[in-house]
Length: 180
Ligand code: HEC
Image 1 (cartoon, rainbow, N blue to C red):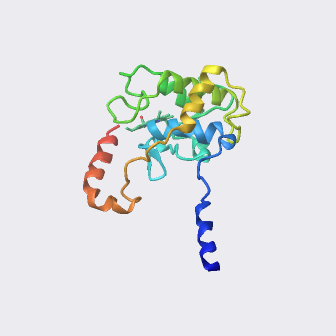
Image 2 (image 1 turned 90 degrees about the horizontal axis):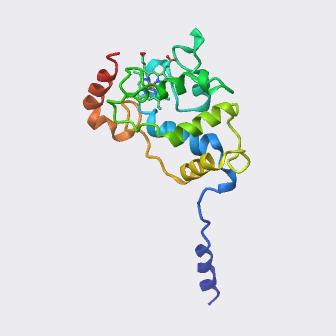
Image 3 (image 1 turned 30 degrees about the horizontal axis):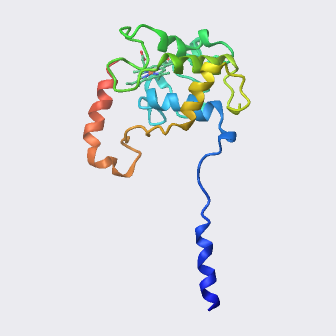
């Protein structure tokens, strides 16, 4: 019966792994650090300090202090970038990011070195991990991050479909954060 021959085609499912060659420093490492440590408070529907760190464009647009000459990211100058200054403040400083009393992941020294490198290199969006002239230790951090899956931020009041059940709880949390 010829019919039987048609069945075998289904076995050739393509693997869906991300091609390492296409990984970029921004999307596959910088953005992952921000997701783990910052996005819970800085995203489109919850912009603490009027800052949304969830996209490249909004990151460069900066927050409340951008217009006062304190850009969140100053391409080419990590020391002048507010984001780096706040991460580097002592943990007990009330302006330290992420706030030490929050559940957000603290930025590790390795991750900080990568963020600084990225800004110093011009805060580019499209530099491929494979082409970036990263020092060995930072390269190792970037590669490890590029393989990591970062869980999305907790559901927001207007976002995920099953967020409604917990609505009042989330609103309480937001009020806490607004006590600045
Ligand atoms: C638990 C909530 C929370 C997390 C997590 C958090 N932030 Fe913030 N962030 C705030 C709040 C609140 C403010 C506003 C402080 C103020 O207005 O005095 C702020 C302000 C800022 C500002 C100043 C914006 C401006 O232009 O004035 C920057 C930059 C910033 N955060 C960066 C970060 C970075 C980078 C991370 C992750 C490493 C992070 N934050 C994680 C709550 C958070």
